[in-house]
Length: 255
Ligand SMILES: Nc1ncnc2c1ncn2[C@@H]1O[C@H](COP(=O)(O)OP(=O)(O)OP(=O)(O)O)[C@@H](O)[C@H]1O
Image (cartoon, rainbow, N blue to C red; front, side, top):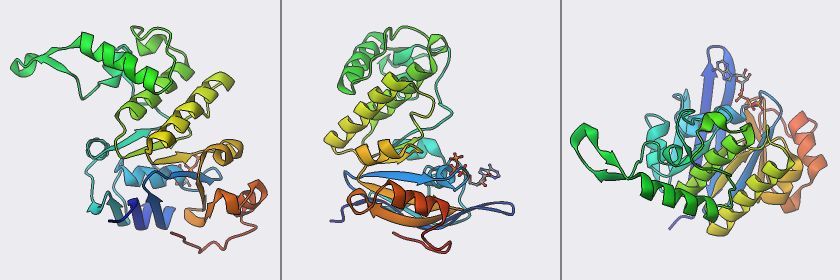
């Protein structure tokens, strides 16, 4: 059996005349943690948006867990086992932490047609367990998201992804807006995912973080993958030279 969990072949996205992503060939193996790096506008977010079908790709194929997939949208990707944490978080501001964790997959106590009664106690208890298991510290889970700091919100989103992640997690700059302590917390969650064998794609501008936490580094430049390197065969200067174009021709494409 193949140990590949995700593969893209020739993945391409154009926005009108903008070639945001061109012919991306990418392989992620089971348990592997891959960093996606590149300058602003290099195509990193576009790449992950095509995988989870936030928008429809212009060309190319996506294979997930052994079969070709054509997700109709992010919900279908999530139902297939891909959890994502994006920069603009999909949290419901007026709901508390358990309701956000279970948004779209609520635990039902009594199914009464459209008026099902939710099992709030079970959702709260499982939320506390999930936060504990993922090492996320939220002072009061009964707070609505609106009353939380940016860092706490980000932690809720990551806890949600980590708690339900079955096959793959994608994080798009999860620590960009966080303070030192919150960043450390998120990095602990990532380590926990590695221990649990959950594969991860992490978009990050933070090379220290990338070298500390990831197995492999994939560099995007001007919409193309220009390098895919195991962290032991490269270093920060090398990666920067791929990011800036000192190394790696503009027409390179690696798997
Ligand atoms: N919805 C869109 N419509 C038009 N152009 C877009 C759209 N989304 C992205 N682009 C363009 O596609 C290119 C790649 O953008 P993308 O957001 O994927 O880069 P990125 O590597 O994620 O950058 P950053 O690190 O700044 O988040 C850029 O030139 C961007 O302006």
